[in-house]
Length: 301
Image 1 (cartoon, rainbow, N blue to C red):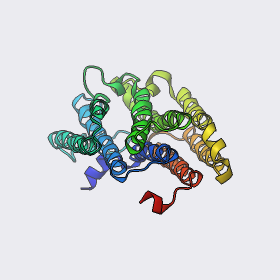
Image 2: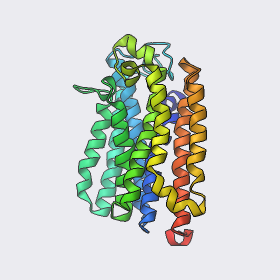
Image 3: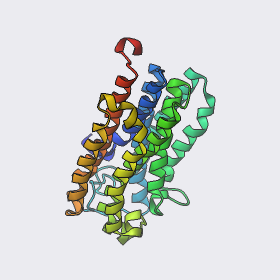
Image 4: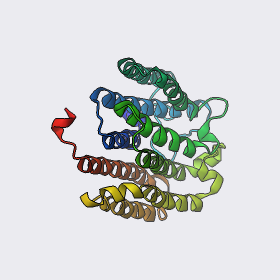
């Protein structure tokens, strides 16, 4: 069981949770809330990411892109802990469960047009690692993460909960900011695996642009994301919203400082810290939304 939990890559799961929580914040600013869509969005996002993580492990193994003793987290299939067939089955079962949750949400809300983005998300979960042009193998993983862990979950979560896209000054900057910070998690992952990926011909952004460039991009991403949220900080300043970007950037810069000095498996804790820092940032944005809109627990019920 521990091998399967490890294959889910729990240190990266805050990334999918963050996108949904940010969508909650945007919905609250529209003074709207529905519990069933809120729960379904969170469950769908988690299942879709786990399916993507399973697919990444299975298809990278099949393509010969993983090798034993790699710097990153232990790969169960490559190390012989999990059979390729079991991982393949787990990938499609988990993805099917995510689709069932999505269909339940669409049926309950009557929003059948959501089938199109749902299919796109399911395809992305696989296309990240396989298909005629695997995104993660050609330097497109970072852009895909910004879209499918930022723009898509934030905007769609806001819509299904509130029935609208929310306040434009909040929803779209927030979705891009969350996507950029989620991409930083991938940057740490690819930064750590750069030598292994280069050896097997896997062209991630770390392989294409080099480690020094990725260090700089990681640092800049944090400041860009906070700058995009300037309207949010302005609106929530009275309830301490201005503290949020300062705290995030303090942790962000400390992670970046360590990132420049370590390599290999020593980067694993930084991947988790980057994801948790993103989750903390979004949780604080959600708290600010609750305070700013004066939403009470009774009103939510």
